[in-house]
Image (cartoon, rainbow, N blue to C red):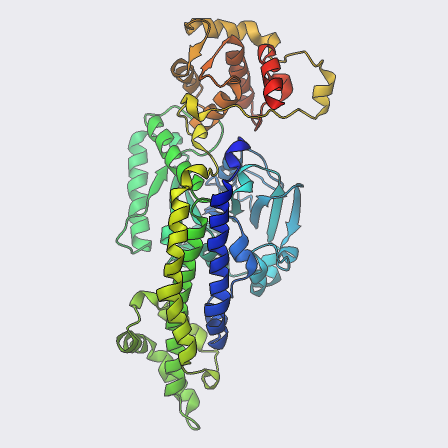
Length: 543
């Protein structure tokens, strides 16, 4: 992907950092003291740290085994990553954070949990059972400069439900769901199954439906009639689990970089691919807004929690029958929630799950609870009514400058083939042994050019060049995804004129053949692939 397209406008970056810094200050000044005073972390999620505010947008990829999770990640970053393995059997048995790093390496979970620069320090409570199955893969990759991706173990099917993972899998999912910007839930179009563990995983995602995107993957492997039946079944099943008035968006696709199978709904798959990539592409732009939204949601939960703890403290006897009163209060918790809603006008949606709250209260000493402290509650009200409102102008300024902020998977990867989307970038030199074996003037495509020229002239070029429309029509016959073909176009249109001459077209065919043979496309065009007639102009532009 173009280096140029990842550069941020300095003013926009300053606005984003300013909003994030203000959110951090508000959290430490207004919210954290209340969390500590009412022991919020004993009942809900741990407190935020600096890394939670500084980290890049994160995408959580989850689903049952063999639904294409790891392949989906490789599709996004167009690169293999250390430890990745693909197969029909369960191949991913751990959580893997795929993040940017100058050097390719794997960092084990226990080291991650003590690294202050990583947003994973609060995973300690899940113990070694989880940390031994958690790792971070760091690698230099342009996409990972803007987002981080979390790969998850395949959710067990009904046949394997008796197997134990050694840690609380739904609780870990909920921990990540609270902190990520997007949750991608993958289903297999020709193997749709809802297991007990999948249902429990859905429960962990409740409250975060706004982050959830459901993908019906491998849709090119079924015909249109089967696809409609599977789609209807999936929507019906999701409706039973997520009891919300809004219908979850389900993307239909085949998310990998290999040729797709011929099917009647091929065009639909391409359109759905564009929509999902556009959604992911916008994540870096909306990172500050997501953090603000999560902070407000947390503040509302803290307010409800403070009222619950205070009410329980006031109802406890001073000396006698403490234990029986405690159990009675826990039993009456739904009624207590209603009383607090009426007395303090706290919205019902701000309260925690009643059943889970009852479970956590069982092991608590109510005598240590504290009543409402007016100064702390006034500070919390100021956060929700005034401080957050003061950040809105900064967010609006950021919104006005969105056009200058390019995220991952830009429009050039979405198959538009419009000339204005494709600007040539500085080409990187190839630094491997293969380039040293060749002469500096040799063009590796030359030996195949007669075969490519035959295709070129059969497409009836005009004044020695083929238009983007003709090239796209021929390219789509290879059944490669539009995202891949658009990348081929950008690499091949060396002079950036929106058309291909015979050398540029030969380069395009050469890249497509390499992709069909299973090779990764280069992010930038290596020097030995630059057509001879374009080498002087590219060298001049680089200077």
